[in-house]
Image (tube, rainbow, N blue to C red; front, top):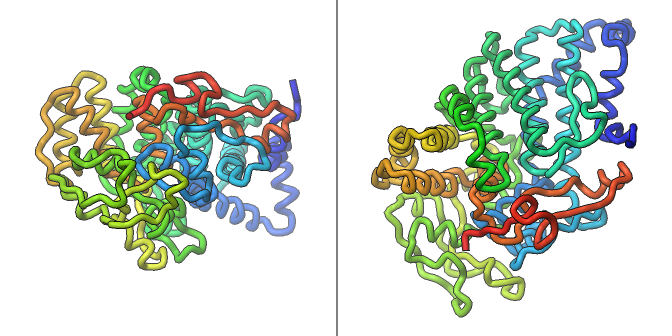
Length: 480
């Protein structure tokens, strides 16, 4: 066993946590007793921003997850998109020398930075620190613990874990399922703090919006539902999730959209979605268009140069998707990347110079967790009612879905692909993963980054293609 395994990840947190809290704060505060409190509160008030920027970074996994899901398509090599969406699928290059290694390394390091800050804040509260509003600080810090651990558990097969008590499991990695369990424990504590409190998150804490503690609690409940529902690696795991617990979270969740105001690409911006919608970058995968127009090809015909416009009873084909008669991509990189549609729903974000609101969590997403939980716990009629009261009819103008399990299950899947595009990190990928729909050979989770393995003197490993365990590390199913 390597006793120093976790030190490189959590050095800041561990230095903070290994000392006597009150003594250290006393020494630091001799010069200016108010500065340490202000500094720590400033850290608390940046927790959401730091998590948000890490989750939405161009240099994170967002772009690759979108194209691996076949919700979107792109042949450009940026952020690993060409490599991770190649057909047939290949193993992910997990060497630190790989040109796109940053998509896992930066995300990994950034999430551990959020975790270290959050751990320190909680330790401060438990150690007797008196912030201006302890409930507010704890709710944010517990969210930071849950969001960082949960994001890591969504994306990687293993997670090194720590909390306000220090390194856990003697520095040995948890499985993704164990890490997700811990994340849920932390978000439950965040919900308790928010429900106990009476505070307001100002525009600086979630840019452009103010949320009461009660509203933040709704967001936390929805986020808990997201974490649990998206954690499964295959259909068997998804079916075995605690859907009653997910339903409880969703019932207490959002009835409004959580949006973040961009500030002109300065400190607040949702970056990977920009590249998914920006002209000349990604296109909408034909599988998505085929869902709206079943007569349309779901895969680019080998002999085709262009395709006509699709037609659909779903009003969103016109409102959210932009027809293109020509291609931006290079044919010798695979015409399977071709598509005749671009996503335009959030064009205002780019057209205003990234100075408008972009959704991070739509109320529609919470509704879909509620609907799936109702369906999976036997209330198919209730699930159909949720779907029929939602975006399927309000934005899509589609007919009501019948209270038949197969129809409801497909309607939930349809709404997740069509309605939730370019919002939360990896939503389409996690949806396809949990239904065994990812193309055969697609990795189901990333390995711990090679640079981290090197630092810990651990053997390198990877997944994808035929590397790993079929159905557990790479897909042996597929929508095709």
